[in-house]
Length: 218
Ligand SMILES: [Mg+2]
Ligand SMILES: [Zn+2]
Image (cartoon, rainbow, N blue to C red):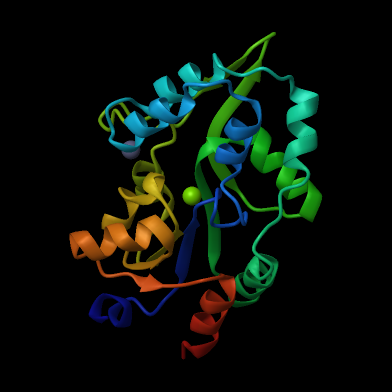
């Protein structure tokens, strides 16, 4: 990778949350547990980019029959990739920045990070509750019109000068930022997407593979 060689300086990692840091897609688990019938159709139109994350979330939240304490109990059962914390320590040691970019929710990330004592800057949608759940999107990008949290715009803002941008993800919310990253680690749907679109991506199964990559770098 010529780009990479030319910019052998710092690496800056942008990491998806749902299904990438967590073993399961937390949003999907939450919806399956608490939404009444109809959410699959809503999710399918989001995957086809017919509706925005904001619309998808509010439509899905209308089907929710739960409250924040039940939700929190469910979130506390979520597990993370067992090598993620090792990856964070190694990045800290080597001076690489790590940002988590999620089109999911602050409440989910806060709960999981508290469980595992993880302290990493993240950008996500806000979940608000006033008798019913709603989404707020402080990182929306009007030019994009699809994402609640526009990862591509955030990545451009946060990457700094001369750093090599590494993106790690697994799904639909990652399909836009991978086209702008220097190095992509992908699994599951995201890996298939990259292959279909001819986007160069390295397949990974867990953060152990990313640790191996970091350790092999001169
Ligand atoms: Mg994901
Ligand atoms: Zn976007």
